[in-house]
Image (cartoon, rainbow, N blue to C red; front, side):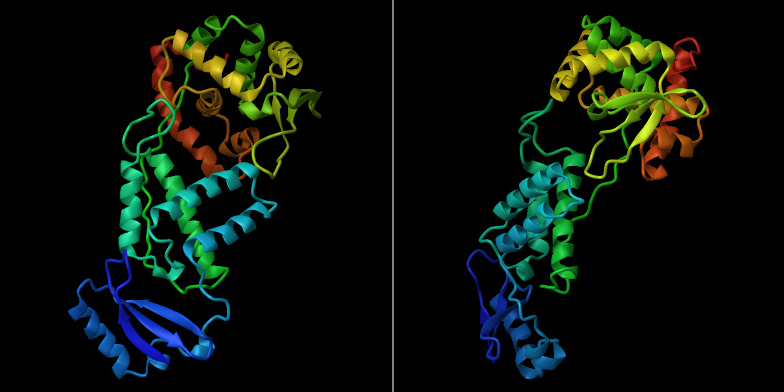
Length: 353
C-alpha cells in the first residue's frame, strides 16, 4: 500500500491517493485543504497512523465493486428506475433529465465519493442562475422554487441510493437543502367559474370544465369514467384512469344536471393538451389569467375547497379526491378560509352550484 498527495485538474482541494495492492485499485480521500502546506499536515496524520484500522480502510472491508464515476452511477440508477414497476414513464423521464443535467454541471465527471460541499454549492448556484427555458416566465433568471426543489430531491434520492442500496459510499458531503415556501392557493369562486363558462363558445369544452368543477376530476380522468348508481341509488362516476402507475379506482357523485355533460365528454374525447390550451384561452378572455394559478387543475382545487366550506369531512373528501393520504387533502381545508372571504364578497354564495 502506498500513499501520496495529489492535486487533480479542476479540483480546488488536495487529495490523498492510496494504492490498495490487494484489490489493485486506488482509494481517494479528500483533504478539504486548498493549500499544499495544510494538505501535507493531513497527509502526515495518515502516514503516522495505522491507516488501515484508524480510518476503516482495511482492504478486506472495502467493497469488491469499484466506486463508479458520477455518470456511470447515474446510468445504473436510471436503469433501475426504468425497470421499477412502481415508477411511471413520466417519473423516469423527469429523473433522466434532471440527473443528466446534474452530471453535465459537475466538471470532469468525478467519482461519486469525490462530490463535496463545493460541488453542492456550485449546483445550487446553477439552479438559481440558469434561465427558464419555457413557461410564462421564459427567459427569467433562476428556476422557480418548486422546480429547484424537484431537482434537489431527485439528486438527493440518487445519492441516498448510492449509499443505502449500492453501498458505494458510507456518506457524502454533497448536501442540498430544499426551500419550504407557503403553498400558493389556487381558487376560482362560483361567480368566476360562470364567467369562464360564458367565455367558452364550445359546448363540449364547457362540459369538461363542469366535470372538473362539480365532480373534482383531474384532466386525465375526464375521458375515462363510467356512469352508474351506487347502493343508495345515487348517480356516480367510476373513475377508471387516473395519474401514476398505481391506478386507484374511485367513485364520485355527479349531479343529475351534469349527466348530459358526462355524455358530451364521452362523445368528444378531446386530447389533454387541447383541453388545457382552450381553458387557458377562456380564462384569459375572462380577464382572470394568472400564470400557474389559473389552470384547468384549479377547478379541482376549487371543488375540494368548496366541499370543505360546505362541511365535508376530511376523510370523505380524501376519498372523493382519490388521495392516499389526508395530508394532501388538508391544504384544501386550510384554503377554505380564503374561499369564504371571496364568497362573502360574492354576496354570500356558499353552495357549489
